[in-house]
Length: 423
Image (cartoon, rainbow, N blue to C red; front, side, top):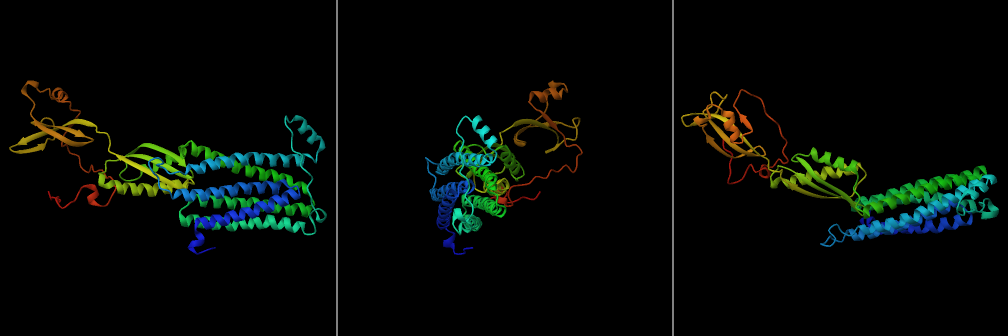
């Protein structure tokens, strides 16, 4: 494998990939048409689509270096989606044509079935020409040419896929990694074709070509459908799906400092996933950067578990809505000392407090008027009090809460003008 950083340049790698596909397409289409092989010819057209996709990767790499601006806040990566859509539209009918050709090649071995299918079809079905096998049809070295092209193509795909994946990871281009993985799957298809050719000549059974041709057509059609669907979803900014969004919310819920996720928006721009979250937090503004770093790290790992390697995160923070409540502390005054009373009977005054989200903002010390005639509850209701608090006899009621940062400054607990006070 190449170790020189220049050889891992995305432009050098994709140029090598394009050269590989150029050789494959020329060899497969030439030999496939010469021996009337829908299996080899169909795979050759599959490589044509692979070559176009390699060009898209080059375009995406170049575009990814253009900074976003006011008109294109997420960049211009959706041009890749348009091209993927076009390639998918071309691959699906191509796969259908070669699948029908292989199916009718099998039907030709049963003339009655072939005739019945042609009578039922509302359109003309293809008439595959007989496969050419043997040295008389292909020359004295015809078999070795076929084996060399199919077997060599499989080996070349495996080697280039590892090269492309390594370069993609080194440069941070997830689209190159994905294309390298697809190249590896192409190598498996080519191994199937190579095995089919060997079986044809080993058993003198040219009909083996046709079921394998149907299999290749299915794989090519699946690739076309995935490109078509992926491009369509990206153009319409289709969400990443409920399963992924639920995993995102679960990841946020276990992150310290996060109370809730108020809004979740996900979609794709080209091959990149975009995640926009509105986070509800009580943490001070100084701690937001710490929470953001933790969230991005854990969210990237969560998306990777769902097969999404390239993602962009946009996180906004907002405090919880202010919920105002009125509560009263039963108090007793002994000289100048005010303490919370143990019960209502010992209370001489009441601390009437206004709390926002559980934190006391304002309070007054009041004594019930004699006119209430001991009806303290009615008097407290008139003060809009919803909770009456006593000192009671409760011990060990401590709640443990995780904080989003280990730095006291981000929690507003330290500073040169503020020192802890012992009490």
